[in-house]
Each structure stands twice: as structure tokens, then as C-alpha cells.
Image 1 (spheres, one colour):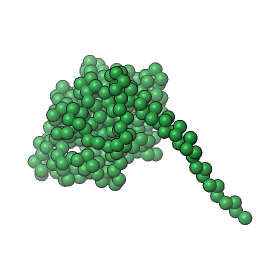
Image 2 (image 1 turned 90 degrees about the vertical axis):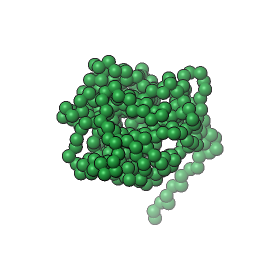
Image 3 (image 1 turned 90 degrees about the horizontal axis):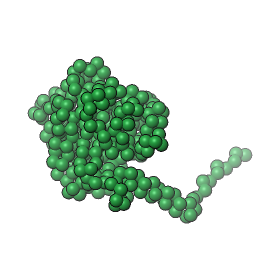
Image 4 (image 1 turned 60 degrees about the vertical axis):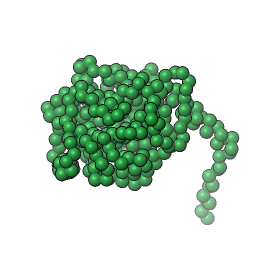
Amino acid sequence: MAAAPKKKKKRSATVKTFIMIVFAAAIVALLYRFSDGNGSLVSVEVFELPAENEIRVCFLEVGQGDSILIQTTENAVLIDAGEYSSRRKVLAYLRESGIETLDYVIATHPHNDHIGGIQPVINNFQVKNVVMPDAVHTTSTFESLLKLIDNKNIPLTVPNVGDVIKAGMIELKVLAPEDAASQSNVNNASLVLRMVYGDTSFLFTGDAEWQMEREILESGRDVRANILKVAHHGSNTSTMDEFLDAVRPSSAVISCGVNNVYGHPDPEVLEALNDPQRGIIVLRTDENGSVVMVTDGKEIKLYTGGLAADE
């Protein structure tokens, strides 16, 4: 006679309370790392739109790809939009965020896991400007995107290093690439962007690999940032020690898919990020879902709820 399946034991109230206390303590510790040290910390568990003096940065969970929404009460910028297969998620995120118009849609580089969802975005929202590096890719996704931009008469800008992409309080300075067209590796044609607001800063790196990281460091450009979007989904082609130590982030966000076939993030990269001497808090979209942060220029708050849009 087959044994009856064992019933799962219910957690006692004491255990539940302990777990909640530990979780709350972890959130407060994370927020303290982002703050200016004055003890003014807020753990936000309910999704809200940013206040007038705030910028919200959402690292969207789009599987194995990248998509980042930067938003204020008046303006919005979308950096990448994941694969085409994640389009419904991206559209749902934008609608949930109250987006009707995007000041800029930025394609960091023309790989499908970054530009695949841009066409549906353009077809469903008013897009004022598109920004791309001077890099081409022989895929139907890239070619059809260029045609759509042209058909809708959307201004297309290829920025230079030092240019600032500005939408209200949102200011993104271009740190790389110096010459995207000369890159034999499309990843190294990625736009690398740094956003500074007050005393806080974010670094968005696309899929830039170590060759581009070294070029940026040798140029002397300022890469310091509280928050680092880890390049190339945590691949070992990027995030070399020298670059990581120059950025000196309090937290790093890795955008990657659950159990992805590439093995991202790479164990060596995780080891570097988790080095106790660096003290970096690592967040991952495959484990944490969408990562939402809000800065008022003094501290960065972590949103622990909301933006759970389904496909």
C-alpha cells in the first residue's frame, strides 16, 4: 500500500513574525546603503508614482533581456524593451506606470533582446524621439524597426560621447561608444549612459564588454554611480574588477532570465560583485522580479511591491 503524501507543516505565528522582521531589517539595511546617512529611510511596499521632486527608475523583469523605464511626473525615457516575446509585459508596465508619451526611446544596441519590444512600444504609445548608436545589425527585427521609425517620422538621433539626453529632470550623459561603427563586436557599440540627480547617480551599460569598459576608464570619464546596471546580463565578458572599483556602486542590478541557457549571471561576476570588501548589494530580475528605485536627489528608496504586470 502506497504511503500517503506528507502534509506540509504550517509555519507558526512566531516563525512568520521572525521572517517578517528579518525581511524588514534587510530592506532597511539596503535603504541605508543608498541614503546620505542621515537616517531618513523609507521602506515602500505599495507601488506609487513618483512625486514632483523624484525620479523613478524601473529595471523591468523581461526575461533574458533589458528594459529600463525612467520616469518623473512630467517625463519618461525607456532604455531598451527586451525581446519581442516580452512585449506584452513591457506594454503592461508602461500602462501601469501611467505612460502615454515617451520623450525618448533609447536602443543601447541592435541586438534582439534589447530592441525586440521597441516596435510594439512605438505602435502603442506616442514616442517623441528615438536614440541609437551608429551600429547596424543584419536582422529583420532591426531593419523593420528602422522602417517603422521612418514611417512614423520620429526623429532618430545618433549621439556622440559627451552629449546629454535631457527630458525635464532626467539627464543622461553619453559615456560611450566613441565610434560605434568601428566596433566589430556589436555589444561594444552599446550606449553607456550616466544619470546624475542631486547626490545620486545611476550607470546604464547596455551589453558593453571589457574592451569598452577599459576604453571608458582610459578616457578619464566619470563612471561613479550609486546604482550600476550590470553589463551583458552578468556575463563574464564584462564587469572587470578595475571598472567595478571605479564605479564603486552601493548596489548592482542584473537583468537576466530565469534558468537562461547562457548561464547568466556568471559565477565569477557574482563573486566579484559579492566581495565583502566592495559591499555591493546585488539585485537580479530573475530572482527579485522588477527592481524599482526612486531618488529625490538625496536618497534612493527601494520599492518592494508593485509593477507585477503579467503577460
